[in-house]
Figure (cartoon, protein in one colour):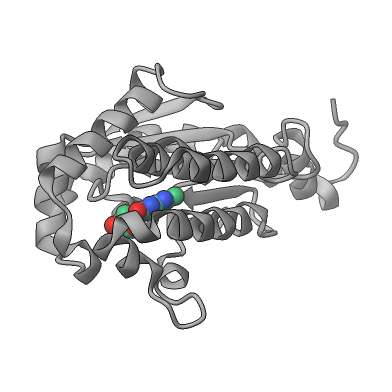
Amino acid sequence: MIKVKNIKNISKMAHAVFSGGDTLRPFTVAVEGNVGSGKTTFLEHFNKNDNVAVFAEPIDMWRNCDGYNLLELMYNDPKKWSFTFQSYVQLTMLRQHQKKIKEPVKLMERSLYSARYCFVEKMSRDNLMPGASVAVIDEWFKYITTLDHTKVDLFVYLRTSPEVAYERILKRNRSEEKTVAYQYIKSLHDIHEDWLYHKTLHKCTAPVIVLNADLDRSVIEEEYEKFEPHILNKTALELKMA
Ligand code: 8LK
């Protein structure tokens, strides 16, 4: 137990108290959910808070790895590019986890865990990634998740019906997502459900808050606010403000 000796160090201590073992880590929240579940809207809401450092999915890096748009390559020829794409996703997510921040709360869009448990899972089930490639991803995954600053303290699951998620994808019309079929979204939905809701798939390494993300943009803020004290780890903030 850390004793609070002076106010100057209080923010540092809030980090330490909630580090769950590894060195001075912020309270780390990963927002998870299907493609089209409203993660960006969720991040925008919390980005207004000075105590939160928000990390959006590093999609621009996936679109430009030394000039290659890996996201586009993966969607256009998944059999050829899934492994390459997910190898890079794993590296960029690791970097997000390890980025140092001064705020007591880190809010990440997805995580190393959804990379492996949802997306690699899906590619493996669809035979887009052969067993040998999954094994290599897994060896890296097992190693890097032992490193400092890779733990997640809380998952926020933006739970949508696959129909609503699919409708939103059609509406936002992202160029790489043109080839995405409803069936893909439905099975990605089932995988998220089994991992974070039924907890029957892989390991759920932190508590999960489930939000009704089918709600329209105009009312979803109320849903966020209901859970805000938990998401922001009220205790860490109280310590910081003491
Ligand atoms: O989230 C942006 C786009 O990237 C969306 O079309 C789904 C895709 N994607 C993917 O194929 N594999 C991923 C992620 C996103 C995120 C992780 C961690 N792995």
